[in-house]
Amino acid sequence: MIKPTISFYTLGCRLNQSETAVLEHSVESDGFRLVDFEEPADVVVINTCTVTEGGDADTRRLVHKVNRINPGARIALVGCQAQMDKGKLLDLPNVRWVIGNARKMELSAILRETADGAPAQVITPTIQRGSFTVPVAGADRRHKRANLKVQDGCDFFCSFCVIPYARGRARSREFSDILREARGLAAAGHKEVVVTGINVGTYNHQGRTLADVLDALDQIEGVARIRISSIEPTTIPESLVRKMASRTKLCRHLHIPLQSGSNTVLRAMKRKYTAEEFVEFIRRAEAMVPEICIGTDIIVGFPGETQADFAQSVEALREWPIDYCHVFSYSRRQMARSGKLPSSDKIPAEVIGRRSQILRDLSTRKRRMFYESLLGTRQGVLFEEKKRGKWVGLTDNYARVAVKSRRPLLNQFISIDLEDTRGAVVIGKVAQGILE
Image (cartoon, rainbow, N blue to C red; front, top):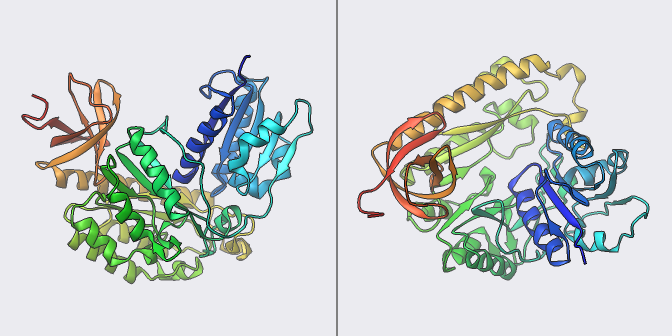
């Protein structure tokens, strides 16, 4: 019997990447044959994102691409945009399934139960609260550093954000289920796990917190490194920073969204901290953890953002111990509270574009400064790929390193002496005696 073929494309965050890895294993065990996205397939699944207008546009672009290169495919749109836009997406050509986050992980069963020629389906029920489990995945085919979902949803309701509506309220994965998947990932050869969720710092299952998750992961044989994905500043206990400083398996890397350096804008965004509280915390973290890398997110063009407000964001990125920044243009999102602000507060697109470029250029300089601060040191690197004749991987403190080696380094931890910076990478060499 010929197996039906299926391909996946993931838009958006690490949580989506984690869920796609699980879905791939699920459909494969149910009799589908996985193929690359560019290859002909009977079913094409796009795991969607709706954080920005760009994410929505990417979904439409990909649907048209699929219809161009794979006109016979039936398309399933799953995830956040599917949850929010529902019937609108069904109007796109050859879209047969629109499945929201509440039932996304049931994709395999839905595909199996849908007869050929059946009407197109929109499956977007309300997302329920309560703890959850995840079908345990094996190896993540797309990543050497495996994403491990521990939490979903958010209760913060920042005024610019639609995620509480797309993902539901905050809920945590059952503690034992996290450890079961982590052991499976380690057994499949993954040496680093990235703890991910929508608001990971709020994890709480039967009294266990994120700190308990990290402690338990630290005991799993085969897991050599644990990295925390983006985490809200008000949810980071000082004990976590102390654990990072003690040089356990926990990576010396924090990605903490600032969103704006202006208290006026932070209040309008309904963020839960002031600029002063944010910088006080990251300065304390920098003092406690040698060579820590701290990254952030900044939104440009929030309604009413003045030039003075923006200047405070520039100053924050320039003067604070922030080593890189992801820059996002403000997007008006349906249901997000900021959409109700006066239209007179809207920032022109050309202004947003200019301001965004200023921050991106500054972020590039700050990242280079961080890389230069590591020159002359020896760092452990987990190598993820070979690119342009060099093996490329990451240090625990998030420096991208490239080295030449005649021996294969893929998925190995190697001690590397860092010697120079070149573009977006640090050039290093294998420490003497390591591979001899």
